[in-house]
Image 1 (tube, rainbow, N blue to C red):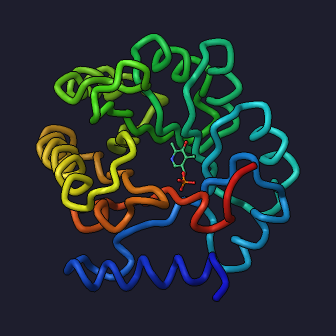
Image 2 (spheres, protein in one colour):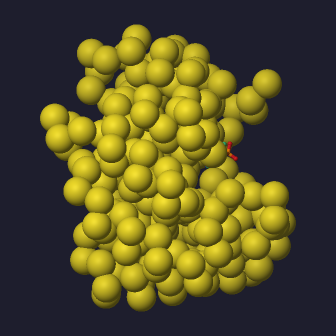
Length: 223
Ligand SMILES: *Cc1c(COP(=O)(O)O)cnc(C)c1O
């Protein structure tokens, strides 16, 4: 069966399996290193959210596909010198992990656009090499984003270390889900829990993900 439509059916089936409301999990198609043709295939299956990790590559796709009214999410590490372009061309940034970048995104978003949707990236596995704030620092960064007028605080995103065991995948995601529920009480604009990739999205949906970010499952392996 075709990868994109079978992944979409699988997300719906997992919502049912774990008692989640139908359509409560949004699909973000991760199109990094994939062509415009791949993106259009997903569009034909009813996918309109795309995630990119590399600013230059993404900007070209965003320009070429302007007519399709897609929603673009920046999900990669943010270099300070790319922050302006990211702020002006994306609809979402899911990989915010420091104040300096929040300030730059806000300055460069400008008031002619809608506010830039923001998820704070949490380093749930506490890997020193990975981006993201420690889980107990997420609240501070939420407070900073909340006070920047051109940013709209939407939630949390995480990329846990690869873990083959389903129960251990769920435990990590449960920590994030608990933090998400706590933060929602403080910041009512928070409504997105971005967790789950091709290898672990069942565990993420089981633990309350509202957005799964799938690359390989939709488009096959990246070269
Ligand atoms: C590449 C990437 C994904 C998709 O990974 P797959 O394993 O191909 O599904 C999801 N989220 C982020 C942040 C990524 O960089």
